Amino acid sequence: MAQVAAQLQLPDHILACVLRRLAPRSLAASRCVCKTWRAVIDDSRLLRTDLLPHSLHGIFFMEKLDPSPPKFIANPMTTRRIAAAADFDYVHAEYDGHHLNIKDHCNGLLLLWDLVVVDPATRRCACLPPPPPPPLCAGMEVFEFYDHVCLSFDPTVSRHYQVLLLHNVPLVLENTTMFTKESEWPPSPYPVRVFSSETWRWEERLFVRRGSEPPGTIADMQSSRNLRGGYVVYWKGSVYMHCQNDSIMRLTLSDGAYEVIKPPKTDTRPSLCLGKSMEGVYCALIYNNMEHQLQVWLLTELSGTMEWTLKIDASLVPVVAKFSWVSFDDGNKGPWILHKGWCDVGAEDVGAEEAPTEDNSEWDFGNGIILEKEDIAEDVEGGGIDFLGFHPYKDIVFLWVSEARVVAYDFSSSKVQDLGQLRVQSIGGSFPYTPCWLEELFEKN
Image (cartoon, rainbow, N blue to C red; front, side, top):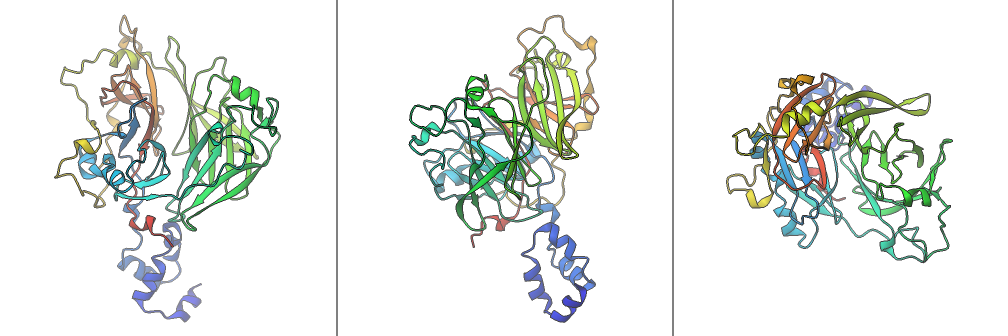
């Protein structure tokens, strides 16, 4: 490689233009080719790791049955530096009439309801072309299928992103002879519509089932209490989809295969929340019992077999007891504040999209307290736990306690920290946000 580089003898500015097109991971490898390449990369500041998603800046969330734009809760420094993170007026102005509900977040990009991809940090957005009709809806109305949507994006590998439309189980079967209640679901092959920002078009991909784990049936899915499934996670080239019967479907994008993974074994049917953190794909189980039990499981692959490893099994009764009766008027607002969207943005906040020069936007989660049994109040009725998401780089889950406060629970140390009050009626979806500052993400070929 070094000999080839020497033979090219490109001027430094031309070489910099060529190297600039590489993804950060490849660019880092290119620094090892020769001293000339390393000098060009360093002098031109091509490897800007500070522009990549590497820290948590807050949590986006929507309220149930609320048409207003998503809201953003974060520490004041973050909210002021990138007020655009919760300001979707530029999306509304460019794509008037589009829904602003967030369907997915991946490494700094948001996917909105009407297939608009947004980078809040740079205030850039792109409306995707309409997808083709669902390939499984022959003889059926399109609305009889419900699609999961997934955004896959890893800026350390490529500046391009993909959007996947994943079929859920059909809602009705009267208008088709293709399926019966006994039909296997997901079927094999399983068709998925995939959009690529590199080609700027949709294509259909077929995923074939592998492994011995049998799928469910349409009847199993329709009889499940979890009628619509929920979460979709992208992790290292694979998509993990939470199905209606609480099973997990893993699609490997590189080889067009999928497999069905059973959820962690439980005696009851807790609320299952899929997510990712520093070690991989996690599953949080919230039990609606007197113990307010929380389990966190890590999905691991051993000898080609996917298994769940229990990371924590704890009672959150002390957490509920501590924060159930915190008054909204006692001055205890907490370090995080709520930013409600473009209606709250002042003139001094607009346009604050410059990349941070140092990573001081993270709140220090090491200041939490360990709650003991004696912290339990005599009466904790009315308290409850809602799951807001995993911290992307630490063993921390975010919880909404008693419809009153957001807390961070470090399940490696059992420390809890109050992040602030959150006065909303209900949570309809939440996404921990890691900003990405790469301007060229929305450049079309």
